[in-house]
Image (cartoon, rainbow, N blue to C red; front, side):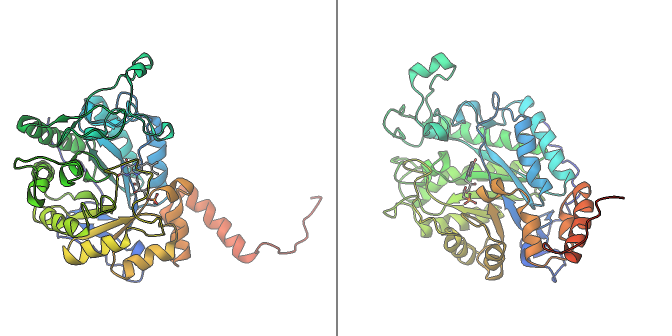
Length: 411
Ligand SMILES: Cc1cc2nc3c(=O)[nH]c(=O)nc-3n(C[C@H](O)[C@H](O)[C@H](O)COP(=O)(O)O)c2cc1C
């Protein structure tokens, strides 16, 4: 497969992290930002949101509309959902994958649309590991059972650092030997080349939420006694070797993100100090942004480890940013423009990601821009919307709701 870099109107010469875009009068949330050779139009990120709507791992029109609406709404970066590097790495039969040419082609249609709307597109490469072969969230993520085969959803065996099943009723995963480890890293390398071919601007390695990489990081699952287990260095080794392979395959001028679970559970098995140590190693290997999340190694993802207060990952992102001196992206119940702006102003993170709020209001960036006093906030929208809305805004300013007027009943 060739790794042709595609044209990107927002891509420029590489010059490191965190630089602004020369618009100091704007709120930070709306200042462009350069990461390597990519300039993003603002610091609002659509966080990855699995849709369980792919067909044979291939995104459909659903994904085009779902992701396209966020680009239309003015976000700086639009993340696609966690996307499996091989078929057996999927969580469910309906998860997305990037292991066939058909999938690449379907994604290219989406990334082209996102770029045409002025946003950058981001891939999240994932591997479910022992969390493979389950049902969707609305079926409780329950492990597939042999009887599901009659609906075309036969269970399959996942792989992991150690043969520890994810829960009652789940098949114990195969403990990965050296060949399996080499193969998984190779799968990521090939998926990275496909990500490039699919037209993405950013590649993220999903190292959080209890999936394969975290199954090596966390001693809750990793009970190995070889060089890929044991102490922190041993448990980090798989993830770091994998990142090295991805970085080598992903062009130098293009940004690489890594999503981390800052803490993996109550009891301090993997804690923020471990995450800071990991972030330093990631930075040394060319990772540009640490995307800060939490949890997922044990129990359902919907069970909170960190209290779900607004901005619940901000303290982690702040520590990683300061102690590992790396750009951070933060997510977690951030719903208000002023809150997002304050996180950036106070130097707690560099990018603000939203998931559920954007399902509620895909035009959140435009509303936030208006609230924060960005003069040409309607420019974030397509002209076919903005032109009309500008006229509506002008009239609303002159005639606020409640204005009395004589409405003619005849010509
Ligand atoms: C429908 C849905 C699907 C999600 N899928 C993913 C995913 O594919 N990868 C991932 O890393 N996080 C996923 N998440 C987690 C979100 O990216 C985000 O971290 C989380 O929802 C907290 O942000 P919020 O409070 O703004 O929703 C998902 C969340 C939702 C609501």
